[in-house]
Length: 249
Image 1 (cartoon, one colour):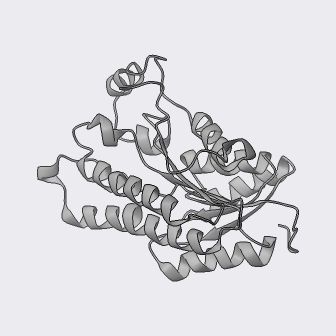
Image 2 (image 1 turned 45 degrees about the vertical axis):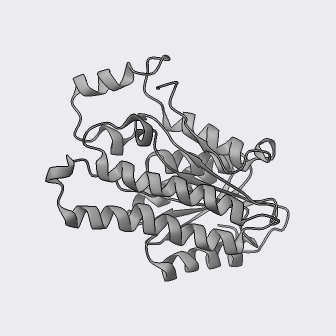
């Protein structure tokens, strides 16, 4: 861990950075030269593994616990990034929940927990990002292509991600004059533990066959999109939802 601010180093916060897409995003941004604060909700060992992998590859990272729905936790996460590395240049909000159920059968306590993470959590993280990102910075939220695909069983999850898209587009306009971009990435079916959990081989094969590219996405595919959006080449992309799904319509 770097203990003194380095003004020439760009700094990224990645929530949900201990697993799945967030884990790969953290590693990719570290490879791009960012100092990375790896945010995690509860699995410290997994977050520490990400940090160790980043440091073994010559990068700089630090793991920090934060409940994204709790404003004090998220403020402390940003405080840590500023105190340790000097500021914040990119925020990638990859934390999320995905309980699947028909609308008629979903336990409302699951709905409340889902919305606390996916909607309130996005709002809390975005609020801090809007206040603290340095000029030239970038915020990337995560939606899902299921918002448009409307798969049965995804009602609550898709509704939460529809809210993420609305917030993203509005915040991009509210950031006028700040030289900060705000976008969302909406992956299609992607081979993560979260996506594969509870699905049989037939279901996975059917979903993998849907894109014209005839495969599931990988965390590396999505990390590459995020790398573009927070990098120098992505500065003219703003207020967009990028559907990274291999061409599913």
